[in-house]
Length: 229
Ligand SMILES: N[C@@H](CCC(=O)N[C@@H](CS)C(=O)NCC(=O)O)C(=O)O
Image (tube, rainbow, N blue to C red; front, top):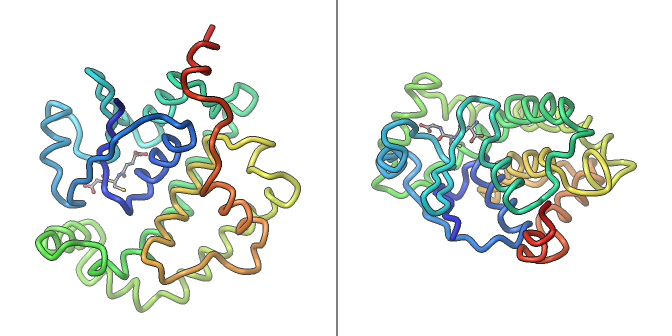
């Protein structure tokens, strides 16, 4: 059975989790503390310490670069999910880089403001130390002070996605593709604390988010495996 090694509010882990659910792919989830990566380090034979990591029998799947999408492409190929159709090659690549940088940054900062509600007491020191080493001392207090500005920045950055969704059920066409899951992961991270809502004015985005929270690919995993060429 596929195993997803993750922590629950990680935007990149949510992407893969939703893909697994969407594909009705039997899987188990192993949660690790966000700042303690010894399991990942050991499993990857000291090659990787980020999450998500996927284990499929003897195969261990993890990203090889900032924009690699190795895990999603592996699941796509194995379970015939149609997430990366040829016609959207290139376009999806440009979009996921934008989603994982421009959209992800305000999302994680806004969610991290509530870090004490998510991070277990024993993990709080390594969590804070990790953040402050990466973003500077007092970074989370600064994000808290900038909360209004960050919310406005996110709303502005979501405008183009609202426009894309005004004539289609999903970002690119009639079916959920990888970038839909990617944006869903970033926004689910933003919403994780329960203290925010998506901007009300972005009604198409709100409807899309509702769809993305529940959709399942038609047909079982077994039927799709039989259909493979
Ligand atoms: N491009 C990678 C990024 C993964 C990533 O940045 N994961 C974060 C957690 S959300 C991480 O593990 N960062 C390293 C760390 O926290 O030490 C992917 O899409 O999986």
